[in-house]
Length: 243
Ligand SMILES: [Zn+2]
Ligand SMILES: [Zn+2]
Image (spheres, rainbow, N blue to C red):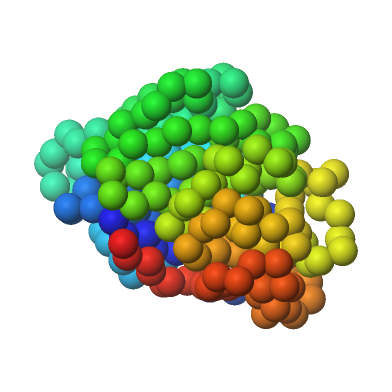
């Protein structure tokens, strides 16, 4: 499977960028994970948004769902132009009923996932773990039967991430704070915490995402490397992982 970073900023996008959004592909099946602000402007660099087969959202904070609305408009307009009636499934949890209902539009259909259960979307099998965040949010462990990607979504540190991320080939983490800073009130992790998780879970590769808007972000990599011997990548637009 192939993962492409569409957006990686926390809270709001910097110039020309996007907040949380990741494109997951295998055998021509395309699933967008989260759809933050700016995602629709970035997505055409990698795929036609109308070629998406599914979308899944971790939670209903704006930096993860802001562009769901314009994605729905793009499907409305493109169905009109192409004289088609294709419907895009958008998976979300139902702990926020209002947020969940906004996933459904003329040509998108909200589908509730049960976080206690395994979810199959095309070739991807997904299991969930509730994170520690001001609103209900789910981390995802995704496999195509061969490799494993874990996405922490938004969360402050939880010991449970060590098991949940065990032996993942790729671990994409919330890394919204620098070493020594406490992100727990905001529901986010720092570079030391994510490096520690990567080490105890023995992952192959760590990607630091959900970036802060202050400080020298390259420092995050050096800090995480103090705790994790494997490869550490600072998320950037267009970064792709294939395995
Ligand atoms: Zn966020
Ligand atoms: Zn959030």
